[in-house]
Image (cartoon, rainbow, N blue to C red):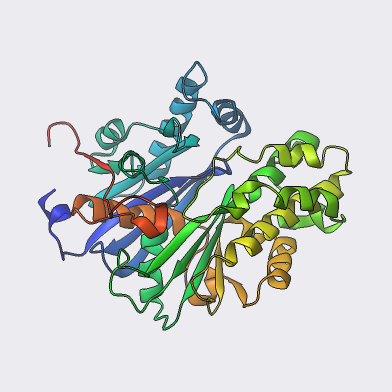
Length: 370
């Protein structure tokens, strides 16, 4: 553990992410000192089965109750399976599974026990990344922006750039790489843009028994219902100044707006809502980014990517265009954040979550007996 805590030493960190899309567990290795990215290592993906996904869905929005224990068991079993194959890593960043997020009310809830995972892996585990931020008045999300700042430095960006993560919920990070550190004034602005893949996933699951609209094929055959889109954009969330964050189910009424539409028209309209939320979000950027780099599952949807290209005033590209891996960026982020937590470095700041001051969240659990 001394090596993990020693500032300035490059170590090998393994991160895991199970997002609100409920598709599975991403696992990825990076080499970092908690400041700079020194290299990217192996990665893998462990999909949830249909039965596991159903158990997790039953826990969404629940702060307590009988649905949480079976969901926790699914989360722990999936993460053990995903992470055990990795040897010779110094620390693990374990995000867990968010099932409820209301930072101004109950707080934020991620299922999973990092201490039990540390025992199972025989490796120190950093977890519970969000609670400290919420306790200090922050939104607790998004947390990847400090890693996005490191990515902008790694790729040699000379002017502001934006990272757009399209998972279950969308979030945007505006990065000014001219600043020296991510918590410097004006270095970052980050917030949730609105719902992304979650409403479309829920729609096609309900109507067709599919986990998602693969390749945007269903939406591609439909027409956007502009009346529903206008009602969506009238939601007060879009006029709120950032930082701000959402729970996966905060816009559950979106599905109600398209309830009477044919499958293709409903999917097209929900996809357009995601793109419109991003377009609204771009107006909050301190200055126009040179381009928007898209990560997460949404970048695989050509209908959504085309809508974004038409809506935004700058080039829109998948993060692969600059040599990053959009499927693994969030898992890599929690590997990076794990090192920062272990070394007492901040993981969020006023510009990313609205927290009162830069804070380093997370709990470090060592294996029993170590």
